[in-house]
Length: 503
Image (tube, rainbow, N blue to C red; front, side, top):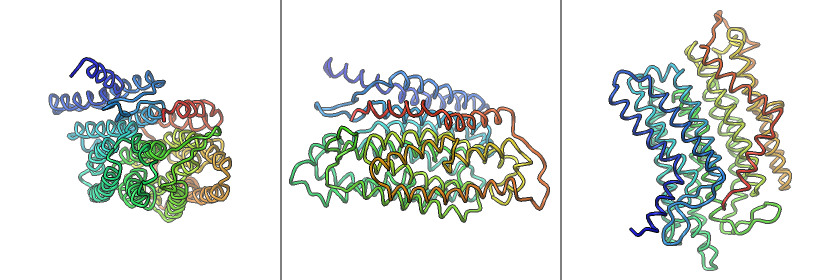
């Protein structure tokens, strides 16, 4: 290896410092778990410290916009840019909260002897999601997705004493393996057509007039199946309700935010990098005509939010209801991509910041209530608004925000989404999304009705969570209101992340 290649390798490693930190924490977690076999207390604190360190390096490289691990003067296998850094920070933020949730979770605590495996597998997911966000090569994309999927199958079945937990893990594995195989088939077709797996090289090659459009269309759809599974978009959502209901609540919350964020980042980068032809002065994308991505994504989006919202109407389990809600929210965010403009992507980033806080908050309160009453069934929520007023009011705030009503951060996310749709003259689609929001109001209100208006047949004694848990609930609920009233920071972060997007 000559000096230039060595310097380039060192520079590339320097660009993935956050990923290297996560990898080092994995090794440290394994060593600590092996040395102190019976004392698992230090593991979550090591995890949080590692995540904070990775977050520091991510903030430090926010303005960086370059390739890493390029070969033969081609575009790199990874791209480090503010767009990717934004999603990595979101993943780190969600990971820290989920570690805190896990420390307070009765389900996770029951598997104390396996805490080493729990946190190690979680960090395996984190490093996989970080590479998903940055990948600009189909092989790296596939390997990163597998690195996320394999630990998540195990974590979904972490609670061994629950039948539904084992069922969730098995269904997740079957659906995940199927979607992974379909995606790999699509990747092989693209490689067969172009002779390359690099997205930037593929973009230049498919502009040739002799390109086989029909075959490439098939390959693109097959790859979308793999990504659509990861973001819980219909009709690739079948795993979501069962896995969300059966998995431990911290893992359910984690899959609903971090895994979805990585999937959306990957989908946006895949479509924009591979199929972009030009961007007009107004920020609208002009894609190559091989695949009509706009129409395809609009169909998937409408199907996701309609199916998610209407299926949620009939749910009696709160976790399962939130699972269908998650499918509907994936549909809303896909509309931002369907706009095919920088403004649409800005709306997605704003929506994701709001969604991360309110959805994690909702799952956290559900977990705290389940810790006390041992149930997630809606009928058992009757009277909880009075038995645990702080938790009840906090859950109400999160649910109102998930609906998209003012003055909450969820309203801001939907507002910018609708602005992007109107600017793109997609009025009919905006009306469908608005009607779906009205439907979602019904099932969110159904939970509030149970908590505050319905009386339980048996007396529900007053209860509360631990002081650290209540503080964490407050720290999640407060931003939902604050950013609903003063949302300039969210908009500024989103605009800076998309403006510097190195594509």
